[in-house]
Image 1: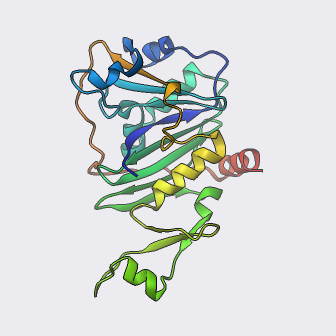
Image 2: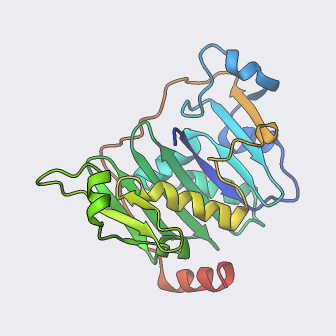
Length: 244
């Protein structure tokens, strides 16, 4: 797939302007016009704390930046969620996500009504870390028993312990190391009609760089990941309202 991005997506508020991000995260973001972002030095990359991509859609606002998403996903630091909730009090659901082909980390954390209701993350060398009740998008991928031909196609060898999942509708196979990337893709498409894998509407992307930014890539392979078990009542409320 070839993607390396993390961020947060939520229902579009009545008013959204980059000045809100400046205030929320104590930044001074400057817009990079057109395709000039491809020529920036240092190279523009949303894995840098000072580089932001904002994608505006009819059903969503997506802010792609490692500084906004990675600490929440990988260390359970909820600062970004609380900051954005303060700025957008009418927004009652947010999904933080990461899709790092480069580091092999994929997953998401979903919030509703002030609570973390589901977290699912795959990290290289650690495996799957999750809490809360699985969302419907996850149920479409079930553990697979491979056919003889699929075993040949996947180049299995003696002692191979890889696990695979199969999509119940399409029949597509995905190894457990990648299945979260497909889940995130389907979840965001179902709820917001868009996914970072889409590249057919680049005109909706806005590129920003902090005037005084620390242009250091954030690691996509953190040493530890902490989880928080959501309250059952908030999970049930979220599922009834969001997926009815």
